[in-house]
Figure 1: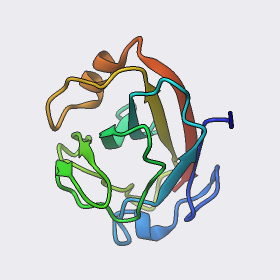
Figure 2: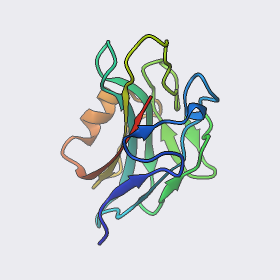
Figure 3: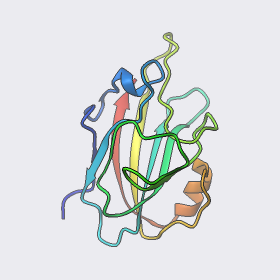
Length: 155
């Protein structure tokens, strides 16, 4: 089986996040695709975090309830908590206390940050409410991660 890999048609690993996916641009969620989902995966979970934030790890996006046969997310998903089209998923709360993707902001005088997009393959379907936080997601997924794929952007 192929290695569990997360990629984007908009940027390469460890390269710049295009401005369209930041708060200075259109604040769109980036297009993502993956391959090599491990056998036994029941659900996929996506988290985007900035570990370089002054306040500690800052969550920009949580998406869960992604079926194991799904292999991509299109650019510009809505900020609805529950999405049925073009792919079924549920979105949690980011650090702005908003549902959906919120891209990075750059006040101009800070160092560039790394944004980690991580896709987790879980061996269970999570039984969690709509709009959970990163801490709640981590607790629910603990002990159920089969594999993790990672893509890093810089902004």
